[in-house]
Length: 259
Image (tube, rainbow, N blue to C red; front, side):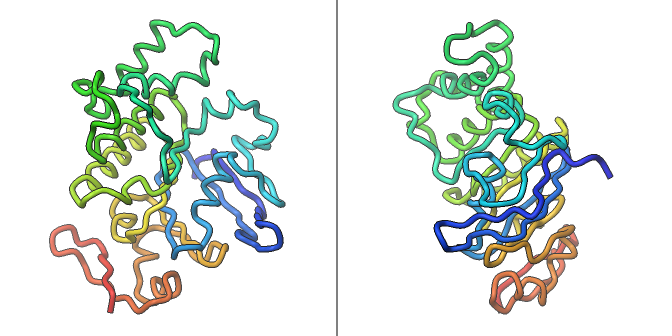
């Protein structure tokens, strides 16, 4: 087993007196895709914000490469961790190239010079996400799937080693969901990226993730390879509803359905 890139130890988070997450222990390795699943209100987005250092835990510790995350400077942390929230900010007339170029900010800062190396990283990121022909299009004029690819390209330009994606497929049709997740899967395995991705569809998580982490009521209640999670009794304990599982007729992988 490779050394953990990100770790959480006994992390808890509360909103006032209301506990949101409790007793979270996580070890996330490089080059693996983790699917974060669970019912609404189980704490998935809060966990992502903690990993992204957008929110500070009430107790417990987050560490990157064995060093407490709080000791990393903001730009140094951003050079390693790229975060796409559930609701991405407005792009206000930006072109795709301008949006992707924002990914270079952690490397040169506000007043730093945008170098040839920066431009090369931006062009490479757009090429990797099949957006080279869209470089001068405004992000707002693109389809949902194209916009998601543009945000992923920005994260690639950031050259981070970890991508945190909160429901990147929620507004997409089936074809675009598959395209985005296939792209993320390829990038992770080719570049050795750690990826944590919040998904509502357990079948998509099973197909595209190396490991599934299931939350319920603010706690991790299951974690393992997709085959170990895709069991009828396990799925009912996670989602609180009767579910069945059968083998995919072409791929022979488990597929779940509501009873």
